[in-house]
Image (cartoon, rainbow, N blue to C red; front, top):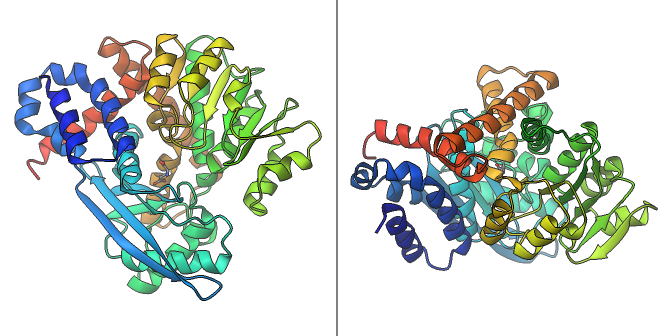
Length: 444
Ligand code: GLU
């Protein structure tokens, strides 16, 4: 049996009922086949893939807090420190009712390769809780964040593990988490990224994931003889990634006609009004029904349906497995040119293969959404030197990083005989640096 298959079977057996983690591992191991086959005995002897797929540390804890009615609430907290071969652990905190250990493990595993692709010195981790910030008062969110950090602070530090935002964790949550960390440790250090600008945050961090996605898309299209200008783009989601993806796509001359939230989606053939979307989502924390009620050109639909709209470029920016094989068939039927992931693993395994088989340009999130964590690493650099860079400086670095990611995944795909397969390219390019660092550091 091939070494990659042995390791995949082992992962499934040892991590029952964690389908998203299995999915993420399967995609990576399948991609690594050509690398591993060149040196199978060596990698097997080193148990390199067993070590790579087993987190360094998995921390689970109770988070008790008191709601506005005086009722005690209990949530589950997680931090999975997956791999620190190339730098301190780095990755976001997801606050969403669907969070469980398997979800955090899939995200932490993906983060290893994503962080490696940025070329910056950051290892892979992820954390979060099944706490749902939606509908909670600011005081309730603060109570949760303080309790969460009271446990988490034992395991993190500016040179140990640096959490950040993800779904449900934005500037408000990072602020409360940072305040509690400082109070508990008496240290003013860059232990979190995505901080407010008044306390060590980086300019362009808020925009980074969405902007970075579009910088990569533009480079991808350029390499295939075209550009975003005058293209139709469909986006799912309406959180931080989606908002700034829409904004940058529009700046690059594309027309973005959709967005969505957990209950419905908007089709706005005149082009999404990004200022209104920001007002509804970032300031008022309301549903998209509010957007639609204030925008004449917009249609609101319950449920899901973004991928039924004819488009040139589809950007899934909501959450994992939101684009299935039926959606992929619709997109292909409607003549889609490229699908690039803004969220983490938003395309199912079957849908990914369907898109690749139909020669759609497909870029996985670990490459195309790496701009967020890349600017987080730049925030860490600024914190270390106690300086702040200008927006233009950070944005220029972000753009260079995304262009470089595109070419490194393209080159890796070519080198291993799979030209145009950016899944294989991303996984191989991300893996090689981590594997080299792991081997150099011995059996630890
Ligand atoms: N949660 C983001 C991601 O999926 C950002 C992580 C970070 O900035 O550390 O990459």
